[in-house]
Length: 605
Ligand SMILES: [Zn+2]
Image 1 (tube, protein in one colour):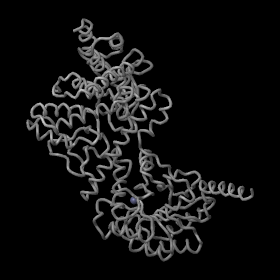
Image 2 (cartoon, rainbow, N blue to C red):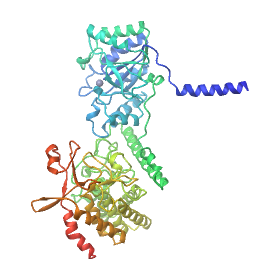
Image 3 (tube, rainbow, N blue to C red):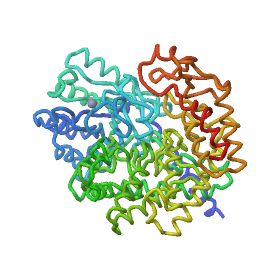
Image 4 (spheres, rainbow, N blue to C red):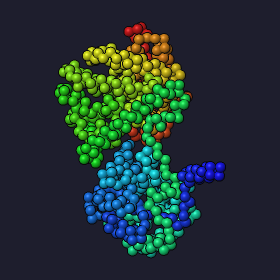
């Protein structure tokens, strides 16, 4: 019995200590070194070894003069720091500040340093230092997603593990060469008490790349001597895990993003299966590009050529081949890729975007549906199994990307943000429905497509999509430009695209519904929308009646949201007075809808 009890006690204690953290010793300091400058290898590392102190080196390829080896370490020298027992961590690739990076760029900067480390047998960095201490919420999220545990800023105060975010660890800079600097650093070190840790940010010792942040070798050794004599506990960033809870790793998956909403829907299993497929494609795309980069010995993916008129050349076969080479493994295409520049090369992104995973599979700007239409015409000109297979994969992609409730996101696999919304903006979802309808009816260039199983699936998909459109209509008015995938609620996209009633996209939805065979439900939806347009507040410009692109969901009054300030104005003029950017804030198409089309539709023509 006593033995049994002691086992239980042992288990309880073991689990408590596994979860618990050690108390922070008095006089604890973390040494960190930024920018990968040469003196870290030639001056700092030997001195640290002499004192037996660990440290973290935040390395990067400081631009524009990283190639100047009189200033910066080579990657081999950085790897040697790891071999000598120090921690090598990330300071981005180029030292660009995270607040000026394009979407996905930070992710790529981190991936580059991780790839470099892997090639040199340096463990994947777990710590990060923000260049110039600049941080953003998006950067924090990216760090969590990539598994970073601790990240360092400036702020000139002691770090309190009980309070501070592990991805916003404050630090003191040691910059300086005179007695004032020395007194400042020594005063900071004395703040390492009462559970607080002092983190030092040290640039070059000396710093030949950026003399304004130099720390003199004399002072540096004085600090080390002080730490040794005063018996400080000296740590590298990675050692913080003993005393502080690291940042939670958040996988960037659709399943994670939508898990909380799954409890509220009836067909949760169908949604779960959808998110699993989407996440699996995303992971496969990442793995495929990484494998190509490795095989080709490339450190950065090349961007796909961008822009260009895609379909003007008469050389259909050549263009079709190029187009097919840019078809993603999932079967879709990105947008704005210039297929005229030749086929995709190994290690090249499927997208011309900054990040390889931005719009990697999309319906925006008619992407994917246009490619399928072009390939169909290429097949009609010169049939080949290769083209047919590409078309079949593309059609399968359209079918797979459909949400269980019948809607389509803008991008698939799911990317996150407003791209996950069911997208009527620029008629993205309508383009998919129209293409699938051609497949079903074997018309519009798809006469050759005789795969009955796929056509049957396409028929069911179009049916579900049409029903989803009716369910998305906002309380017998019109539609929003984008709707939440699970709840179908109107959704806010970019800063200037509020959750609202759309005077623009809704016209296209009604036109689409008018082309379908009449049913009581469709007729009701169409008449309600037409009545809403007829009663909506409009503006008179010369001889034209203008509708607002957005109307408030509650008051149904026109709203104009500034592209720059994101503020809502009641008139276009008031908004323009504060916002220079262009956008289609006013539309005239509803005139045709209520003046011409509805009459013809009612007559059944
Ligand atoms: Zn820096």
